[in-house]
Structures are given as structure tokens and as C-alpha cells.
Length: 445
Image (cartoon, rainbow, N blue to C red; front, side):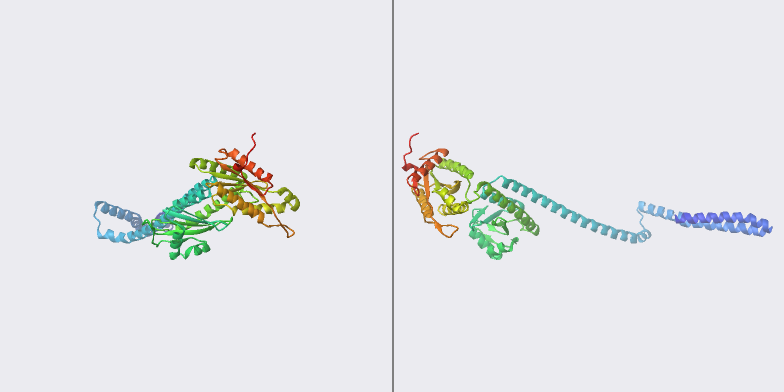
């Protein structure tokens, strides 16, 4: 564009000069002026030609010459010297661009990896939540928690130590050689023990540990976290033996997944309790009793064992309620539940049957042990001083009927009916009694 403008200006100048020459010749009538003007015009034309050659023609000739030499392979020193600085600058620009592209690619790859990790976390969490929503067995849910957390961490082993609100503990592991004492010993090596992990409420990882099991296997690394729920459940989750150890990304994923998973467990546990637990006494409700009795009868049939059914009724409870009020009666029912739970084994099952009636299932035992349990409950209730609002104490008694599977009956509904028959037989004897169905003679229908 610049060369074009210069060319236009020079052309205009020539036109003006050739326009002035005739005017000068007319005014001066001097041939010298005319000749001089023509000479000046010729010089200007020569200057213009050289200028055009220098500005336009020469660069084109230079480019053509260099192109010819390059295409013919005759790279002389002149060309190398002329292009060296340009090539160096181009190389620097290319390096800067390449560095920028590498950084952008690195950031993009990290972003993709993060997204993939989050998607994988959500997929595993979604699968776990789906399982929890359809499973009522709490131990099975905890085992699934270990399994899914191991999958997430790509680790080999895992354990859970669950602390119930009553401070009882449940220990679950993916390896039968891992036990609670071994885990305590392992964590005390460098981690400050269970107390520190529970107190800090954050993941603790150790990638440099050597703890050998009795089978020759070794615990090489672990990551541990204490989890609390609004429902007073507390859990210690430990995942072990990941190839290459646990990274900071693993710790972040572990914390996010475990927190949400355990929160889901605690909520599901509360929902399950509402569906299966009597709200007043905390014992299992009538529906759970019916389901459990069916299960225990099937198990007893399969293993050719016995089970005993006990129906417990508080004597004259309606009169007690009318005298002292339903709120005091509710306190009595709660106390009764505590007495019953304190009198049976962990394998036994206790439920509120309805109103002032309670029911017990005692699997895999004999008649002598069952009678002893029933008598223990009867005496504990009789000796218990139930507190009244006015500060005085009241005494209550219970009557208990007992039926045995399969001796008294092999059918569920008939077994319940015969335990109820024994209960009312006890009441007919004056209450505060334990009666076995085998000891009474049921009238023929």
C-alpha cells in the first residue's frame, strides 16, 4: 500500500510537469525553458523507474532467486546468514507455543482424570445406596460398605469396627485372619492408636508399614477413618494393601465416599428401626416377631433343633393404668422391656406383642433353660420397685406361658396359640406364674 501511494504521487507530479511546459513556452516564448523542462521531465522519469525497480522489482527478484537456490539444494552462506535470525525467532516462538500447549494438555488431562474419578465415585456410591435401600440386615450392609470402599480404593482388604450407642462393638473383616486386637496393634505402630483416629475425625494413611499376618501375608499400607452419624452410630473404617500405596486423591475420595455411605447407612438404620421397632419400648414390633418366628421355625426344621416361644403378660395392667395414668403405664412398659433384654441371650429375640404383652423366641435350647429364663424374668419384675409420680413405689407381676417347637406344635400359628393357652392357664392359677404347655391338659375342642 505504501509503494502504491508513492507511485501515485510521482505519477501526479509528472502530469503536472508536462502540463506546465506548454504554459511556460507560451508565456516566455523561450525555447530554452521548453528544452530545460523536457530534460527535467526525462530525469524525473528515470528516477521513477529506478524507484519502482528498487521498491517492487528487486524484492520479487530476491524471492525468486532464494526459491531457486532452495529448490535446487544450493544453500549458500548468504541465505543461511539472512534467514538464521528469522529461524531462531521462529524456533523460540514454536517452543513457547509448544510449552503453552503442553501445559494446556496437562491441565485438560488432570481435569478429565478428576471427572472420571468423580463419575466412578458416584457410580459406586449409587450402587451402594441402591443396595442399602433394599437390605434390612445391618451386618450385610456393613460388609457391603467394606466391599464397595475396597473397590473404590482398588485395595485388597478392609475392616469395620462398629460402635453401637450402647457401646457394644461389631467387628467385620474381609479376611478371617484380621481381628480387632490385630488391628489395634497395627494402628498403634505409627498412628497413635484407635483413640487418636476416632478423636481426629479425618483420614489417616500410612504407606510405610510392615505388619505380618499368621498366614505369611503382610499389611503394607492402610488408610483409616472414624465416622459418626447423627443417630449415635460410630464406625472405624480401615482399607488396606493397595498397590503403590494411598495418594492424596485416594484420601479425598475415601473421605467423600465413606462419609456419604455411612450417613446413608445411619439413615437407613433409623428407617428400618421405625419399620421394625416398637416406638415405646425399643423392642422389635409385632410384624418383626411374625417374620422372625417363621425364620426360626425353618431353621429349627432344617437342623432338627428345638425352639421355645414365651408369651409374657403384665398382671392387672389395665387397673394399674386406670389408677396411676397412662404415662406411668408407659414408664412401666419401658422398664419391662429393659428387664426382658437383660434376662436373655444375644441370640434370643424379644418383641412387644401388643398392649401389655411381650413375646420371646429362644432358639437352640432346652426346656430346663427356657423355664429358668422365664422364672428369672418373673422374679425380676416381682422384685422391681416401680416408681410413681408421688414418690411411692408400686409392685407388679407377670404371667408367662411357654410352648415348644416341634414337641407342642410344628405349625407357627398353632405354636402361638398354645403359648397363649399356657399363659391364660398361668393366670387361672392366680397369676405371677410360669406355665409350660406340656404341663397342662388342653381341653378337647
